[in-house]
Amino acid sequence: MLTIAMPKGRIFEEAAELLRKADYQLPDELDNSRKLIVEVAHEDLRFILAKPMDVATYVEHGVADLGIAGKDVMLEEERDVYELLDLGISECYLAVAGLPNTPMNEVAPRIATKYPSVTSSFYREKGEQVEIIKLNGSIELAPLIGLADRIVDIVSTGNTLKENGLVEYEKIKTVTSRLIVNRVSYRTKAKEISSMVERIRAII
Image 1 (spheres, rainbow, N blue to C red):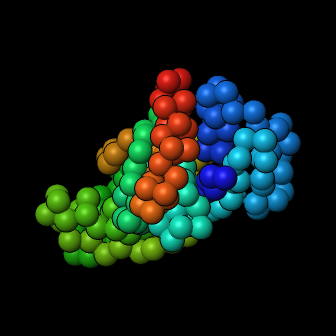
Image 2 (cartoon, rainbow, N blue to C red):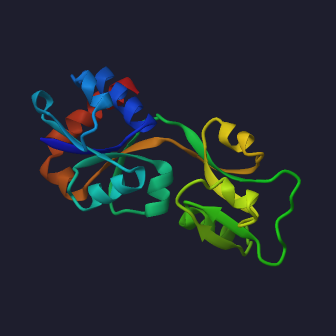
């Protein structure tokens, strides 16, 4: 049996649809299940439903053979896993945003983000020194309450930025979801994993 860690929400829905197109018979109730571990015995698959940032951790430590994770998570977490396929689903991008017509503080600019590692690298490559403030949710609040000059966050439609009166300043990187694998599983379950990769590759 292959164990696959997947995040709930949009990535899960699109990944489940991808697997169905690859001729995996997944039950419809999988999409609405409140369970955190779901077995699909007739396909020899087990799904762990996790927070997006935790998927790569489960795969690295071997509690999941495979995982479906956004490239943003892979860049931020730098986990010791193999990246097998760009699934091309859940496309979005990392961007710098803030209040319109507002210059950054020249003395000690502050950037709020869920992605401190990616953000730090981005500004270091630009030769700019900034203070990174790590937040876990509602990043858009930071410029509104004066906590930060800018935010770095995932942008999908841009509606959340607009609704909060923010504008995009720079695009950092396009993000899609990737199929990742545990290094040991890649050897011990090579046949099953190769079969899944070929079936998915055939329809992307």
